[in-house]
Length: 253
Image 1: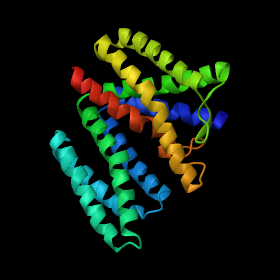
Image 2 (image 1 turned 120 degrees about the vertical axis):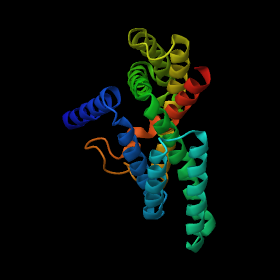
Image 3 (image 1 turned 90 degrees about the vertical axis):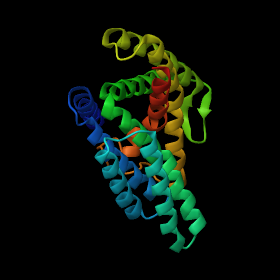
């Protein structure tokens, strides 16, 4: 438990330091994207090498154009999908391979590049989202442990409860309201909308990752952080909550 807490604290400190005080937070998110694609490919039992290589090339292109606009995100996503689908034609089960690679593009590549694009312009916003996700996880755990009785998704995550889900929403809204009052990252109404979206979407990200790991019959998605498993184990909630929050910010500002 001590080892897990130590590395969890180091992980949080690195995120806060890079996103809050340096211009290198975007680079960290780029690395996370490649790690996530690698782990996702292994969970789906497809060769991770092509998607790793193509993703790196697409990422370098995006960096070259300062991560561009929605046009560049769509261009790289479509290009990546076509190239991966073409590569799957020689697989033993081409249709199944194509579905898996297209899932990875939709589940990991597009959400992460959307977040990276925003981090390039406004890294503090991404840090703010991370804090809201941590608040959601913490308050959901505390409420579930104290009041949890009704299972939320018993087959995928027996310990998650409806009471914990509600506690996560309430706790995130309170944390966001207090934090944004002093930090002033975004207008209060936008912050609360993002907090609500984050607290609802985050648990579903965890459940999606749980479904993938259950089907692959593994406990952890990989080895990324001692005591915490793989990158997907740490960023499962981020994959669903962060892009939704970024979109809400983009539309409301």
